[in-house]
Image (cartoon, rainbow, N blue to C red; front, side):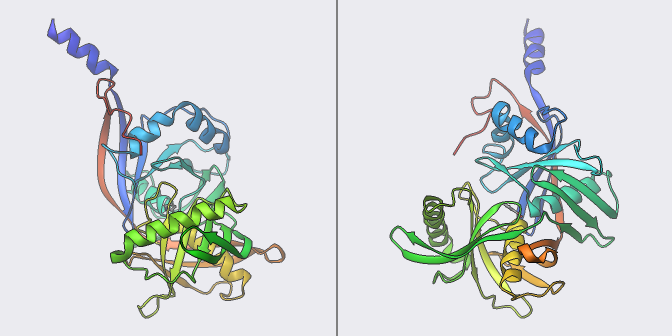
Length: 322
Ligand code: PYC
């Protein structure tokens, strides 16, 4: 009797094949097989289908007990745009991302690891536009991100229990509030205070007419020679980015370009809270509109390959939701 029961149960278990990597300390879990079938439409439509009909898969893949708060998932898809090699939809512990810079570096490193690409140039379809990537022979990866721009300059935000803080609202593939006059030390020992502060800032920015902002980026000068800035980036699900954040650095470049503080082509080295760095530069896309094309350069490292088991008999099969 027990063999057929076991066989029936085994047949109900779904398997999802993933490759895990980290980019400057920030993890990415690439789903290469077994993810939800989202059809063949534009990626912006497919992410909506994911959100509405398959959100449990998002949670199962990145939330505990299989994942953790800072893990970003990446569903590998067929592209919709005919000039793209792959499509990708990024997601996290609470929802979906437009683009993800560190995740795109992780995607390319993972595909190279799996033998699906070698050094060369690629184009990737995302819900917010196509991005280009170049894998160099030494493992460095350039990501030419979506067009980035500043929406609002130095708005004053009244933050509960803190007072007024000024910052910019900018797009770099996700929406950011970027501030430097915050008075906090950007160092790992200050993580709790940074998290609480940035969370309150986000709520205040959302309440003050910018509901789209879901990432907060705080800056301070770096203490390292040759590094232009250090940041703390709070992601939508209250985890902080261990990397300097590719889309956040793109938004930062858009602000620097608009303020004429960084010239086209000049390097900008952005450091994260944990001390990892991205090198970034930009070229103008439409100077009269303040639109830039950012390029983020970094490396990513594969940390594991796994076959996730989704067993409906497991009470936490679909993740522990925050
Ligand atoms: O690198 O763009 C990024 C990113 C967004 C959220 C976490 N990392």
